Amino acid sequence: MAVYMQGSRRRWVTVAVGVVALLIGVGIGYLIGNGSATTAGDVAAASRSKGEDAATALQRLPIEYEQAVTNASGESSSTITEALDEASSLLTDAYSASPWLSAALRKPPVDAIELLKADVASKVSAEVFQQDVDKAVDAITTAFDLETSNP
Image 1 (tube, rainbow, N blue to C red):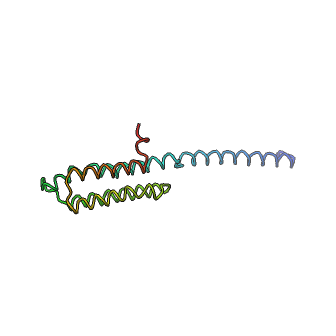
Image 2 (image 1 turned 90 degrees about the vertical axis):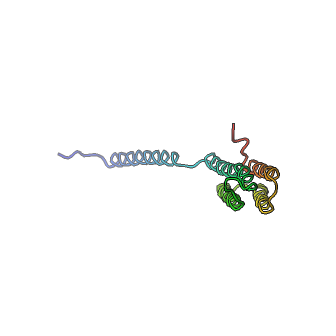
Image 3 (image 1 turned 120 degrees about the vertical axis):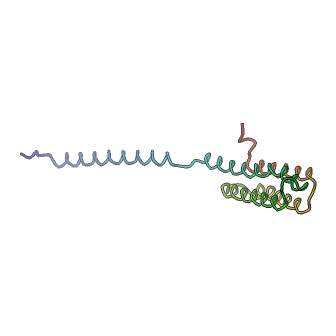
């Protein structure tokens, strides 16, 4: 035996089922999208982390430079130059992750690394090299606002 349902009621049930399905779909889409979205805070944290990597690479150099100047433990100026190239590459990666940084903030760290390369080529004293490394690290710290990101 068939159950008869009026046409208007059948349409109402169809519309109600469609609305419920739409709401469920939107809710699931929102949860998936919200859970996988990258926030501005995440992007800024990644940028700062890459900036810290570049600064850390520079902070290790004075000891190696002093060893290279005194020919201790097999260090050479080419090793220091390679390390500066690596720090420069890390800085480039950090800038790629930070498109909002202005040219005025990007220039001092790049110039500081170039100065360090010139220091290696001219074989400045370890003290001068340390001072220039400190300036380079300060420039990176300023560019990526690292002091305020660390508690």
